[in-house]
Length: 276
Image (cartoon, rainbow, N blue to C red; front, side, top):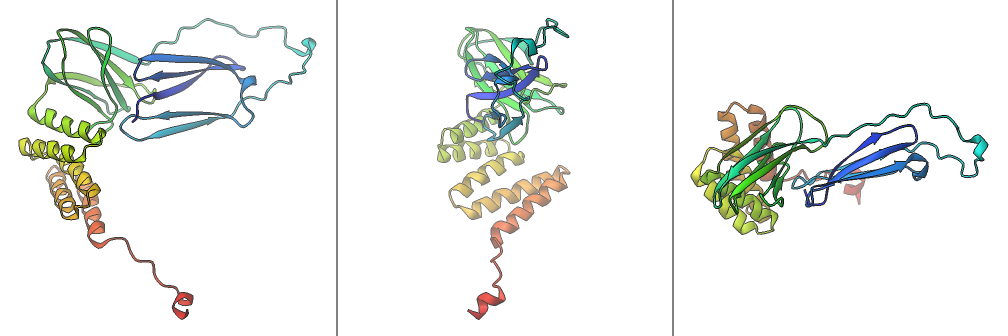
């Protein structure tokens, strides 16, 4: 998901106004806009949120309330407030801290079975060091990083969609596999497919039992037109999923292999076309 606007939500304050909350990933700022419904465009108010690294866009169309007639006289304006109450809106995130040392490589993971996770890592100076939404073909988040200095680091755990739920955050020493796989992901993001394939191949040599690594490398081979290599990696991933008891994913991958081998069906010639 590209940097920039990450998510947003609408909070209705009363029957004439609402808040639009969103954040900018690079600055960790929660932007709040109070918008009167009577100022909305007649065709509706569109809010778009783009997801980082996942390539997902969510567009919500919110129909505005009927705008009040601008020529309304003061006598027509309600003179009594039916309801008014002060409130406090808490940020939809939790923060966790840990002590790190310069040069230490760590893997930070956020896992939830209830919502789409989003992670950010803040360095001891308060600067954003890394962010991640989806990782290793899942909705869970992982950051693999070498810490640049000694000090206390802050982990910001968020829900990408704003939905809450239970989650687990862990910080572990990064394994050689973690670092190689992360290099492959980052190289692909930067547009270096050759370096990405090399790093993923290194990860496979370190741990040959991770099906997702074969799938990722197979997708890169496909971009380069190396179909035989694609089929080999997809077949290996299917075998590993089957060994793990995930027959659904294994079958799906084998169907994809068949499709790649046979190619799309040729359109059938109609009777009128054959007569011509």
